[in-house]
Image (cartoon, rainbow, N blue to C red; front, side, top):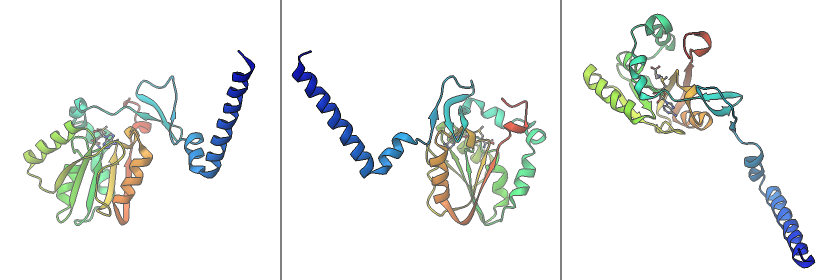
Length: 207
Ligand SMILES: C[S@@+](CC[C@H](N)C(=O)[O-])C[C@H]1O[C@@H](n2cnc3c(N)ncnc32)[C@H](O)[C@@H]1O
């Protein structure tokens, strides 16, 4: 390569490096995004995970709507004691509860009768689950459950609208757990509560 273009290239490279160092210094958030990402991606990863990690934990694959029957299985009461969970929530009749990652509404439809002056928002990110929730709502004649289609980062609830955000067997599937929790906190009324219930660690029979 002739000497002049070689010199020009190294000059241009030096200028580019100086500009990027200056930009990072002017705007530290730029450096943050590049060097301190919230999520990490690793391969190989576990077969039931998505290869994306948050705070050292691998995020699980979403349970497809095809698994709806499994959520409604008869053995669930003896395996997971959902009645005890609902008892521990100490719901008030006026509470507005968001069941986030509601699936078929197993918990939504069990909490709803206790909320005689309150309501449940049954949030799920799969449109098929919303369809199932709509059908079951009609079948069960329960009026105070409202199915809500959320997305990967947002449960799509109004600000300061809920007393309790309940996530049963769902948080581990959230593709963007940090963004979800930030938006859930926005949806909480003052003194609102967040409750997570996860079973995997305790139950060797659940994959
Ligand atoms: C294993 S199911 C549990 C359903 C229900 N909570 C239960 O215990 O029967 C997890 C549900 O979370 C939903 N989900 C996953 N990511 C979500 C998100 N970001 N927002 C809302 N729902 C989500 C899935 O579509 C699925 O229906």
